[in-house]
Amino acid sequence: MALSRLQINHVRNLQQVSLEDLQQVNVFFGRNGSGKTSVLESIHLLGMARSFRGNSIKSVISHRETDCTVFGMVTLPSSTSAAAAGLPLGVQRNMAGEVQIKVSGRAVRTVAQLVEHFPLQVITADSFDLLTGSPGARRQYLDWGVFHVEHRFFAQWQRFQRCIKQRNKLLRRGKIADQELEVWTRDLTDSGKTINDYRKGYFELLKPRFLAIMAGLAPSLTSLELRFRQGWDKQLSYEAALKNSTSADLEQGYTHVGPQRADIRVMYDGHLAAETLSRGQQKLVVCGLKLAQGQLMSEMGKGKCTYLIDDLPSELDQQHSQLVCALLASMDAQVFITCVHQQDIESVWPETKELAMFHVEHGAVQRYSPL
Ligand SMILES: Nc1ncnc2c1ncn2[C@@H]1O[C@H](COP(=O)(O)OP(=O)(O)O)[C@@H](O)[C@H]1O
Ligand SMILES: [Mg+2]
Figure 1 (cartoon, helix red, strand yellow):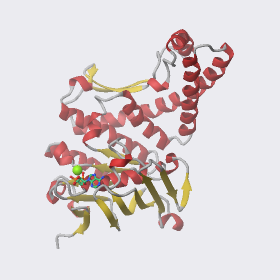
Figure 2: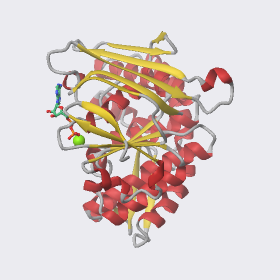
Figure 3: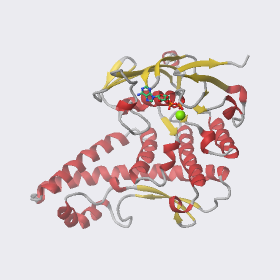
Figure 4: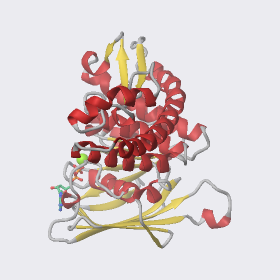
């Protein structure tokens, strides 16, 4: 999957931007405040129907406007002529928080129906909080991967969310007939076990790729480890763990154990990487985690994801920027990357001639050719 065209309306300071003929590697350069991050934000909106900053959509819509729209054409990794023409995607968001998503001209109901067509990986300044932040962000990271390689995952995940919501509602109510709790517990056990199996299977494939990438990115970090925590005692079946925690669940009004408590931990020398590694080393680990997912997806024949990378040269030193760019180039992934000066990426990308350059100035984006 790769984005070949993009139209942006009313996203931050981008009033109306139209980009044609997008390439494998697209570099957006310009002064601070020109609108580079907003271009990445627009692509994220197209792929995920939400902002990548995690804040409300209101801050993404241009001031004095009531909605924003992005439209794009995604080419599919298929040789049929229909697919070669590309798949049109469109997302509109308004100030009331409403979402309209169109895939191939038809309105779709869920974001998942959009996400499957245009998988995105994001590396921004905020991404580097992955190790130090909440387990929820790391579960989201893991589930991104499972979702894109295992098409049965999402239905089970939805089922699990429904069950746990219901079970917690019952638990909060206090007085519950055993039978009623049992019904939801049974469904929860079933979907929870399935989700966990998918996550574990994916994790086992991801781990060696992550470690191989890190050996290239940071060879001095020899004792890195990646661990998966499923959310309950690994000696126990989910059934048994739920049984053990029933009285605590009833007492405190929520389900204590399960995939909703899962986490992945990066360890260094037996300690949490988040507490041990320098900020610079943590950034490399996060890059490694994100690159490993794209690599795995492509190796499994599930298509290629597109990378949105904000201002890499100001996050990493020259040597490590070079290593990350070399990995991206070798993965053959589509990349949208921003920097202040034109040469910031040119000087770290392995093959300059492949780069499509765009100059961003006061919310306008121009294809830039040095000739
Ligand atoms: N909702 C908005 N409406 C209009 N302009 C905005 C909005 N939010 C931010 N901006 C402006 O958009 C400009 C571009 O921001 P950004 O894309 O982050 O720049 P950069 O090129 O440094 O990445 C900034 O000058 C910012 O003040
Ligand atoms: Mg920026």
